[in-house]
Length: 180
Image 1 (cartoon, rainbow, N blue to C red):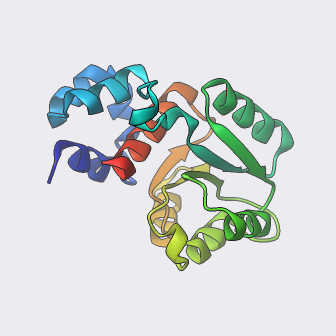
Image 2: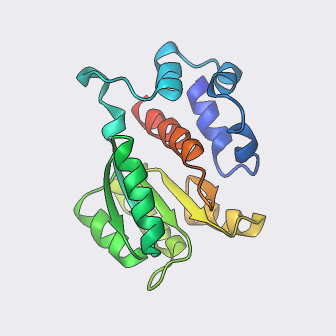
């Protein structure tokens, strides 16, 4: 298993994720023996040239019912160079993904109409969405909630309030793993 694959595997729904991202990215990288390209992507952001795929232009779907939280997340991600769309509930997220599979999904767990867990379960049944990372977001971060997110098919669990720098590094790791 490559260093990057081990890193992504270890991130998973690991309760120690927050502790991992309290460390400097270079320290985390040293633990996994990543290639220079992987290291630069994680520490400095995605390579800017066209041949590298401009990972910072990845397409993100933000699924969040609270308008203020949704707008804040969209604004942050757009400032980082991502292409971003948003949905206010699980059904809207499913409609969106039916038309166009995003590169990564940030999924609030507690949504009206169709919960984030139910939406993720359905998305995981679609061939176009099986490999798309889904980051579960919730203020309820106790082990049962993390386990429910894992069982639904979420790739990683991130507690709210969101730590944006940590979320950005996590997204970069997951997007890079899809590329490698």
